Image 1 (cartoon, rainbow, N blue to C red):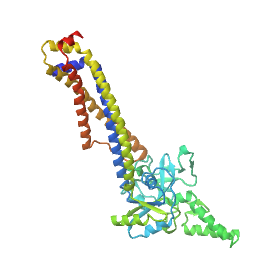
Image 2 (image 1 turned 135 degrees about the vertical axis):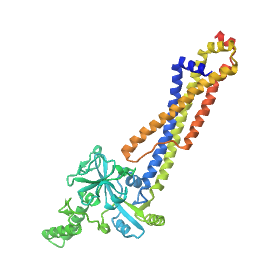
Image 3 (image 1 turned 180 degrees about the vertical axis):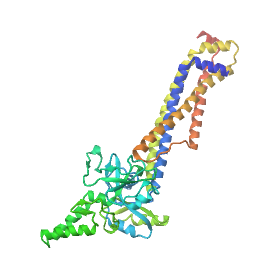
Length: 433
């Protein structure tokens, strides 16, 4: 029987190939949806695990997490800089690191922060050292630059008409270890440099000068302003110009300018919940990134159900087309089947031959569909990982075996239809066709 089936499939290879491809494409659609959704969910969860608590100004919690954890470009409202001072002095806080956005270089986001985050983000550096001056930068593991390379910050993105800053050129001082997060594509620079480039402190000095003009003449006010700028910022800014060779002085936490977000590492879980509760009142909001992602997963779950429904509809259409192909195929083989019956082949044997042929084709199509679905999910995850920096691992889980069983059960029922048609046909009817 097996030899007869194999020779029959070789003779009808074109029709067999069509059946296999139809089943494979329909199966691949459903498998790729399931695998890609799982890779995205697990990859984003691992990325959020790097950060315990995020504090920002009142607003969208989702946008706060997307901007601070996944570095998605979006303007965030600024909270008072004194929040950083309170967190830095809080005994419940292991460390707190401010982050500032707005600039980019060759598609990589430039994030202003402190040496604390640079030292704790990935657990160390693969080469070089942490930035020690305002003209230095630390790059993520996926940034395609070498030590000493130049970074010319651009405000915004090139496709948005961004302009390159001319006040400062950063030089790569070190490279972080891989984290599997969006921060692997980030360029970390001293947040003081970000403030200076965007004129935050220059505005403060201008306000101080304007107030002083009412008490002193213009020359005295100018000298007073210049003197305060030199004393207060330890030589970082002189008449609005940045001195990249000035060493960092991170004792400014008490009077920092406005901040879009602060990443906080509490000492204990209990401290994390207390801090979250404390900073959810007033003008700030504190969130656990994993908590926000849970809501996003619910949205992804709804989208997944829609995509699965679309895939199921496609599979139903394929099943209907297979039935049509099978009926036509059986009609073309009526004389062969009639001859087999006339030579004494029992109905059960004819039923088994037709069923096994069709089940074999559908089973091969399902197996090929799983392989194609895995390859498609792997390709999509690779593209998403390259653009977002979030590592997305594609793999089968135990529940995927259930999907394979359901598809094979459906194939068993579908293969029985043409077998029943041949079983009910008499030799005389077949030979007269």
